[in-house]
Picture: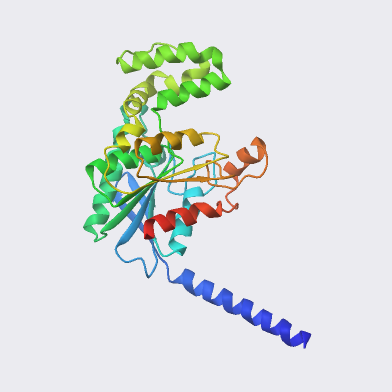
Length: 312
């Protein structure tokens, strides 16, 4: 009897693996070039129809998988695969900075925040022309503001702000400095004020140079001009706002600011989820290590929350 039961369990396991492999093989995966600077991956499940989720990465030279040169966690790749497993077609793409770095022709002083918005508008228009009628934008971190601005130029069906900020970037940086390096707050405040007045900053403390070096000042100024909460208010489409309790970069309060600006938005706060969408049980060390551990699964509620929002 025990042998029969064991064989039945083994057979059931093999059957489930077979069906799992069959479902995976049904996914159509394509490399898509939108233009010379924007390339990405389209995953299309058989049941996706004319609905598509476009995933937009966060700050820096972030690739389609959510990684940078020294940071690999595959957060956006896992997000795309998780949604596609739920029957949702997804497109994720490398930011233009990735293509520039690969070609060795990146020139910081020429890059503006609006470039990222124009890139996303081009992506949206490409897929509209391809026949997708229901497009959802999923903006992670900085990508949430990019998605909000792009949706004002190329209308879409829905938006997900995934760990997106509610305040302008200068306000967030000043808050972080006040908490971690208060001795720099006064200098940074004056520097940001100068940028707002389009006044060049000749020199800053070494600790601020990564943000306010001369070549990066035009970009920072172009980013500072946008207030995420006010920009969100311009939209008239369903919005989902997601934050995580273990996010060290974007606090729960940022989500509250966005939700206050748009009371009709759906608000989801995921306990133990960090900025790269992992579930963190322990301390800050475990949190920081997860940025370099692509094998870790995503926090399960994030896939459920986004897929339910898109489908309903």
